[in-house]
Image (cartoon, rainbow, N blue to C red):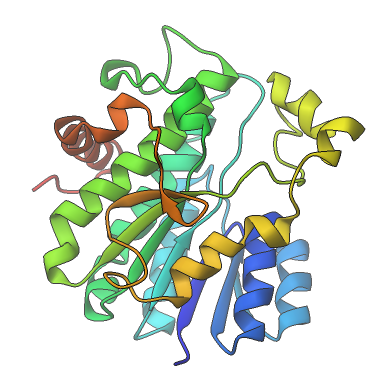
Length: 277
């Protein structure tokens, strides 16, 4: 059955690879990217529709949500794939630490603004998370902007942990209304990831040796494609974080904290100006 699948961060890397596979499988794919030129090139090559939005600007996220809602009466899958790790503690025009906004606040806002469409579509919402949540995440709700304690790795680990907590809380709040949600780790993929970062990961991803042991974007995209194409409740369970198409065996202990997930949702809603009820 053909699905309407929206993928953010789809102008490069695993987002573009997933879009190619999903188009090949006969689905209608909507490409969302930050770069107008790169996004157009990928979309044109696939015969897909496209939108551009810079997730470091929440006004562009709101414009994107409005455009998607007005263009499509149905969205079967929303893949919140855009993200990355960044070099310094720069704040966006909205006043938030860049890694926190791009990886968490922006997809949180986009998903919430599309809730009516997603619920009506009994949609699947997918978060591209990372094993970085376990390796680096140590979330402090009183310091989401990391004003007191910043490192590129901590900011990234917290953002990927927030992706998992968002997935679990989205399931708790809206699964009964038809939404299914999942997060996944794509593996260590040879892309331009971390190229703008001061993290040691920029050296790993940029080294010849590092890239020899990394997987390809096509292989990294397989879990996204699997989650998008298969039936929740049959192939996979909603509200779960996956590694290698199986529920992760090891996780950051905070990822299982239901109260933390609830409080993060409410705090995130306050920060982007949404009702918390």
